[in-house]
Image (cartoon, rainbow, N blue to C red; front, side):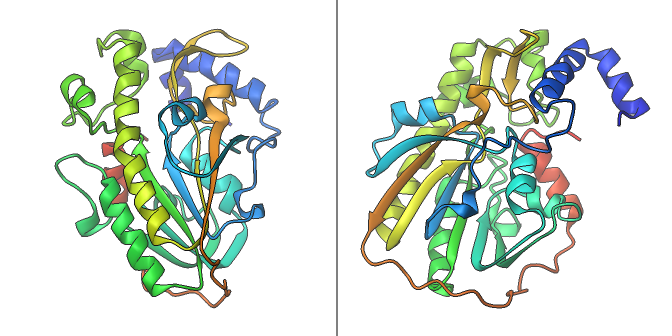
Length: 304
């Protein structure tokens, strides 16, 4: 269902109309709520699942020197909100603690109905870095270690924000203005952001280089089966299908290779923990700070 506002936005930006044609194709005229060829992350065997936000398989394969067995899988989604809906909605995970740097689940919890044993929202208060306007990888690692100490008999789902924008490395710092809260990928197409695809790719690679050592830290801290994957990928100037428009970012509902092909790296270390399902810990679930969640999603490049 298209609103008058969305139709006006499409007329103001014709690229959005063509993007919607591609989305309808990939979703088969909206009969598919998500990528049905994608993996159900909770159907797979793991004790700790580390999610890298917007991490392409090919980029991970090229840059990662992490130990373990690497394969590629398809994600159920091409955007974080869609990933959460496809994997979380209508399901209960009382044996799992979700530690997240992303405000996305909190922001959309009214329509993503799910239950974990606990949710640790690292993006709140001290976990948020005001200088870089994100949750830094080392902050997420420390939160994951603390959660493991607190919940030794729970599966941990750890959602890092990198390599997602904002960019932390020197290339991104030089070419992207962190003070802009109106950042949208189509501005690369319009010329408002005069940055080459090579520069954008290098900025993403530097963000991945920042988070990979923190993932390796958790390999040393956790005993059992630890898996590294991504919620979705990223496109940097590739052509869409069936309409061959250039794309940036991770448009929802478009299931091209760069957007849904993600890593699945399995690493086993020591004895596996005994996992026990228990009633929820409500210590963090009553918070209603909608304005903070909205503002921090804007800082991450999401514009409602």
